[in-house]
Length: 457
Image (cartoon, rainbow, N blue to C red; front, side):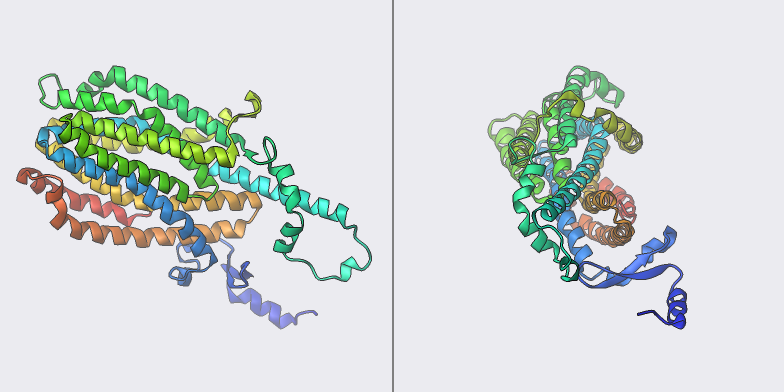
């Protein structure tokens, strides 16, 4: 039935920016025609609704945010325990953590981000290919005839149910039970090698790097900082490997498994901290050892879960995609170097002002990291959803999901700003008893909290 000319003119005049389309749940939503600043207001009336897209974003973002915040929260507990040892010890640990994070984050962010996108893309392409093959097999098993054209189309669930026996044949990597995804093996190898190189560098260059950071041979911070940094460097391979595997699970849109593993590891860290530090009188060395044990426990849990899901051994060297990792990770590497350099420079300047200033800086930094990383959960959801949508050719969902995540990010940033501003007035005494340190915290943290109003996606 043809539409009247007036109807088509009315439809074109209705909106120059958006048109209407129907989602998989039968709900009509705006279809983007252009982006720019307009994207911040696209479908804005749906921000507080838990529609299909909102549920998908939150299902990925909430566990990811909790997992990302778990480690800084565990570091806050470390800071609280170490603060009982004195301002010199907490300042020394602050310098060591700044150095470790500077070296680690240079590789962590590109590795995790690239892994998440590549795994999501390859998984979506593989799923699409399997569906196409299943359709071809179904046609061969049930040849079309003249009456078929008159039959109503079957829904996807019926189609999948009829062809479930074909899935292992096309999804299986070895033995038809687990898939082989090239990006998984590539990410694990890159993470392991980079972690080993990082550990070797920090162990042998710890004293030199501390001197560059302003901790000279006469500083009381040198001995505890050197012990903490050297011991914590032993956990670098586990840190890189665990984060590479977290990127893999994020690509599968599974953020609960990394959350469970991280919680188990961080709880063990919190339990071991007072035991090693105060029962065995190991001081800052005990804090470092507890952290290393927790990281290897997280890695072991994730590895055991991953081998049940995919084959991690490549069939050949040619199946690996190192060049793709390096090519796509280079720009991300430059971005991370710029960001972490600013944090490390600030830590260096604080260290030059003495233990009191460095201790206050360490508390402020850990509070800022513990809260601001919550916004990265939305970035994880965005990466997984956008990579999958691009691979499937669903460009409308790409724009709509981008708009929704930007809107969520702004709301979250405002909420974190208010929460941190109120909480610091009452909670600074948890981390240190030194009134001079608390005074600097009250001066410095308001400047930190204003950075949270900006979206992290």
